[in-house]
Length: 261
Image (tube, rainbow, N blue to C red; front, side, top):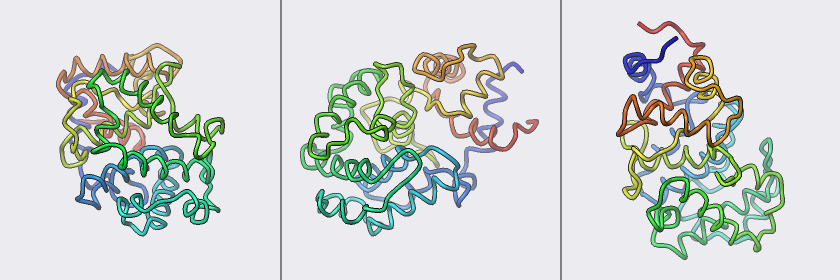
């Protein structure tokens, strides 16, 4: 099938709305709508994006559990966080590829970010570079904090914190950036230093399969180059907001690719 703007706009109209993101089979972005404070939204957004892998029901369950452990007060929890406290609180944490060490580090990293920067946006976007450069520098900045937790060489750490310099599509951080930068009824749009036009598609299985099936890409690797090719195609459709179709494509594929009229 030839993918046209009319088709993408049709599935966007059907799936990109509040009713599709709520509940145990919804989307992790639902957690960002439970908070109003920018810092709470940033913290929940990063945690939700990092653990947005696996079956959707398990993703929602896992994120809910993490927020419950933080007493559903993300910034307050992060501000008072200590490694010793994290070790005790998350001693039994386990989610697929990740164990307690990575979650303990994530909250330690968040604590340091707000102590060392005016905002998480500043930590991410410091020099206002292209997204590739932001992600590469971000990876280095994260590594600079790892010694306190000693998790750099764990498989879980390497899975969560990737860099385009190794060819990774960096799906999780691109998803986080989408939530922070785009502003509509779904994405929160609380950041201003990155433009929606510059975002890169969060390349997950649904986006990849949709793109292969419909001839958008021919590459067999779900890597950075593939993410860029898909984004380039979507920029032709909507130059100012190419990744707006991310959620709707995912929900369309999850629904079995029904006929759209």
